[in-house]
Image 1: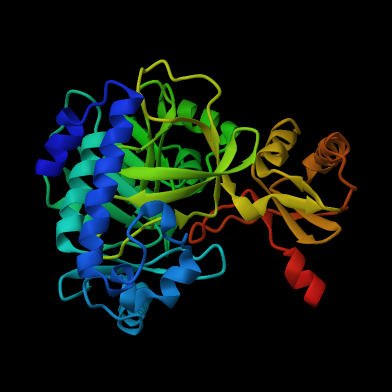
Image 2: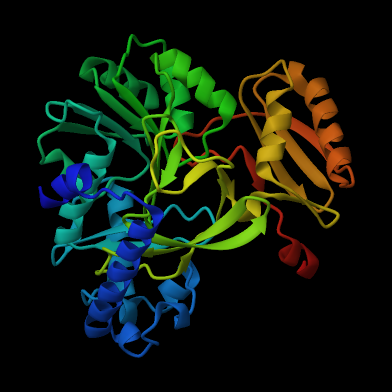
Length: 414
């Protein structure tokens, strides 16, 4: 309850300077705590800017020494893997929730969260996502590829919550959703599209897209299907609750909860390096994500001092690489949006000079070829061989509209 009250009503920043003072104070306090509780941080430099950056590989290699709850990597992996096999995510290790990250980078990670952190997470997420005014008696439908004790924590609060597992018969889950009549619907964009195509008479008060990049065309389609002025987004991943949409439909970084350092890429694009003030069981400190974010050119009309994003562009390593020229995923998506004759699509680079285009209707092939060839010319990239195939949805996996499955270093060593 305390986390809910603080996040909903008490934590307000009148200026950017006030926010940054809050961040510095929280970081100092957090690092002092970690030095007392974590063997890894006890031996590390005391200042944030002197600490090495970490990523999933570093965290997994140092998992036993980094975490503060005495959980070993072997035990955590065994519990999480067994939970996924049985589709039963209620198990804990001495009260600590364990889960597996999605592993789209090729490395499956493990995360652990304490009971206190579960409660704080539930309160904070509800405070920042429930619509203004009404905060009780909501029915929240959440479609996920893996459950966790975190979501059972939400269920215990003053809202009704139902978890829909996307594994198995998705059609059956969607029919159950109709009977549930949620006031808030949370799902990946690909699952939201499947729900929309089912033609249900759903009119939730709010719809949240999670876990996948939300393309502009998909957002417009879903807004019309669910009667929403705009689609909300939650940027939530293993490493933290990173961003949410404001009442004007603009994504803002949750800088009251985390510190974001930036690794500049090009223009307003950057890779975030995050430090979560509240994660103690498994510290997230100077953690480099594999995502590309684009800062908004103009401040948001909502007046928030939190950084506004134009979009989450996707995974950093999913930009196509053609003859040494990087073609960002968003540019590919824009080209696809302007082609006609199909609804669902994916573009996958499968070799140094080969790109596969998957469409749900082959009638769109000529238009796609024209649009993509124009894109290669504009970017100064050599035209790859285009191969067309059939699009096949898989709700059990994250939808990546644009993906670079071929990696330059792996190809060179093959």
